Length: 84
Image 1: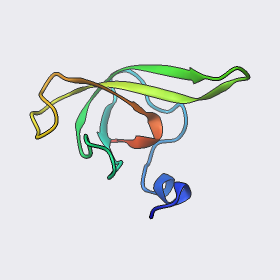
Image 2 (image 1 turned 120 degrees about the vertical axis):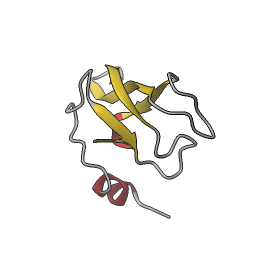
Image 3 (image 1 turned 90 degrees about the vertical axis):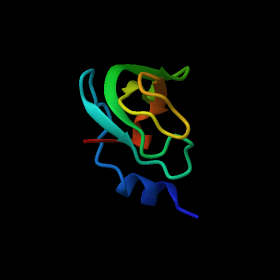
Image 4 (image 1 turned 135 degrees about the vertical axis):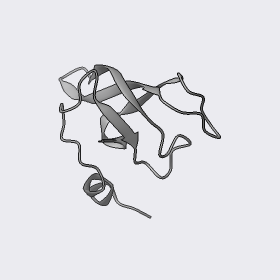
């Protein structure tokens, strides 16, 4: 089992780094969309009752795969993505 800190070591994204237009790849091996790639459409702040706790990133896939189609819009937390 991979620990959270080990998972963070596998991504090259720092908090709040991604922005619209960036290219990303899903680096979460446990996700059904693992290795999906695409262009960031928007970044949505995830807020709990006290403060911002992270970001959700919406990106448009740029190829057809077994669990996705080109043009699909996926939303993932920022730590599941790496900038390419």
